[in-house]
Amino acid sequence: MRVLIAAGGTAGHINPALAIAGAIKKADPSAEIHFAGRREGMEYRLVGQAGYPFHHIEITGFQRRLSLNNIRRNIVTLWNLALSGPKAKKIMREVRPDLVIGCGGYVSGPVVRCAAKMGIHTAIHEQNAFPGVTNKLLAPDVDIVFAAVPAAVEKLGAPDKTIVVGNPVRPEVFTKAKERDAIRAELGAGDRTVVLSFGGSLGARRVNEVVADLCAWEQQEHKPVLHLHATGQYGVQLFKDLEKEKNFAEGSSLVVKEYINNMPELLAAADLVISRAGALTLAELEAVGRAAVLIPSPNVAENHQYFNAMELQKAGAAVVIEEKDLTGEKLVGTVADLLAQPGKLAEMGRNARSLSVDDSLDRIAAALMKLVQKH
Image (cartoon, rainbow, N blue to C red; front, side, top):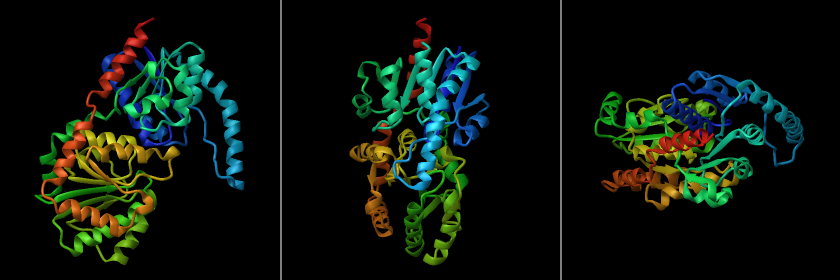
């Protein structure tokens, strides 16, 4: 069986795609899996590291705000769009797939549409409670639509062929969760509260600014906390400047990195996570059962991170602070309140755990195998 997976843009699209690839290999070890995406995107690096063949297709999104630069970018997008059909066809001829799966990002559009037109089995996976435009357009034409949450089913517009499967979480997230005590011992956490904070792979300026206020408060008030923070690529210098300005320092109670390469380990060790509300981050928080303070990114299509985050707040698993209401004072107050209630973080963690769909990958792989075996 040959499978082509199209995914791009962010780790939130690519990691589930890689997890699905692994599940297909587990179900059918002889399966040959290929990926399609942009060379400039994160997918090229992540897929390369995982060792799958990669097929390049250039597709970008339209910029809604009109400026001279954005008009130029939109002209390039139109050009890419015009070439995307023939390019997708060329990839189909090279790979000759039995199954094509779209996991989000603009690249899914032309690749999945081309496969559907050619009569190849197709499926898409929607990670968010509020579906993206590409998946809404593709849903009527594909064989199976996988939705992460029930809230997305009606919005995708193809309820008769939509299966709710949760978000596929990397198996190592579950494995490491069982090693919590050993990982905490390695970090020297002792019986301190471990706070893990990050603003996404590139970093988010606002998140870095308010987390700096929180770190300063933790140190000035001598809180029994071990704080692990990732600044993201664009926040490295900013955070160094904030340390000086707000008079706090890295050391035994604060560890600062640019990027977290061992997320499953750190999630296992954490008691409280402060982060954006990307669908995959939330699925991992549910998988390990962790309390969270969520700051949805306002710079995403249809404000979908807000809707993702609210599902956790409704379940008593997280506190949501919208960016328009976000101040250092508000974050410090929220964390202080959570730390002041014995057992509160553990209770929120249990609520998060109850939302997890642990067998998401098994459900997806089973439905795909059944689809391909039909013919």
